[in-house]
Length: 423
Ligand SMILES: Cc1cc2nc3c(=O)[nH]c(=O)nc-3n(C[C@H](O)[C@H](O)[C@H](O)COP(=O)(O)OP(=O)(O)OC[C@H]3O[C@@H](n4cnc5c(N)ncnc54)[C@H](O)[C@@H]3O)c2cc1C
Image (cartoon, protein in one colour):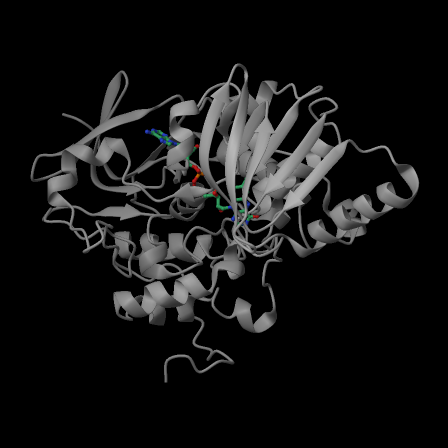
């Protein structure tokens, strides 16, 4: 007889780690979380020394729904003897290294609930239970929670050229990068694009001949983290937003791009100061161009180098940019993972082919016994907070409560927003 879990989580990034941390103290819940990596790591290809979290450290894996949890960031600091020193840094934000190390520390304490080196390849349902199939074994479970992360977004014109000299920023090539003497183009002006550009300019991977940053946006635009904007990163907003019509949700989400995808304002300030000091005093940086309002349309390869055909969206000029190395910081898209393909005829989709995720974060399916919860697949359903860490502990609490059929964690704070969006 197989062990039948209450829930198996697929993918152990911060989102499922948060769920694992909330489910761990609950009695009579049998869980397992699977990840293909050998240990916890967080976007290691993009772990730059100057990269800061865009979210407060208090919005960690557990604190907003369980401030007494031993898996909090504050407890991590205390247990590691860092508490007073951390306070002396006088920072509101933490570095991505710090966040990764904190998550790794939590994952070590939850080691009995986690199987690393476990790549899930298929999932079946026999009418009673799920079978989660990994390379070399299976797990049987009543429910699953899919949080395997989004898929890289690659522009169509770049797809035929993917190689060691043209690749997405979240790729293994970033770990062995050598840009010495190269003409480099970074495509995409979101935070990853700006960080890649700045680190290339500062010689992290050798001294470039030239580095160009192309951004389709109107400018290098700051993250909108004003207090009223942040009211949309609250449980009450998300719960109300979820019940709007799809057209209303799509239109609002589109308008709030900078609330989630802008550049960290302090980062822009520091980069600008660096450029200023270099232009007028230090004169050491290699050649660079920052080009907003540019859209990459076509790529040609000539010998070992690329010709990028780019539209200037402001004056409608056509431009050609030469590159030896092209790094695509073109973001991510939400695509149903391949291991769910076997169940796809049981999964409901909207008119645009997107999965439909309920308020409790379970996917609408025709499966009668058992739920497929999902995290980071419902920006279109739950709004701009969905791919962010901002509400991750609340989202996990919603799933934990639904799974056990009881309010184990408080998911509403019963306080009205300062903004009357819905009444
Ligand atoms: C560089 C970067 C910085 C970010 N910084 C912030 C920030 O500061 N604040 C913020 O709010 N958001 C940030 N985000 C957005 C978002 O919070 C992160 O992408 C976050 O990691 C999403 O968590 P996740 O658990 O959904 O997925 P991921 O962190 O992508 O984790 C998914 C895990 O699933 C594993 N996996 C995939 N397929 C399988 C499989 N078949 N079998 C087993 N395991 C599998 C992967 O290896 C991975 O370990 C950032 C995103 C990036 C890319």
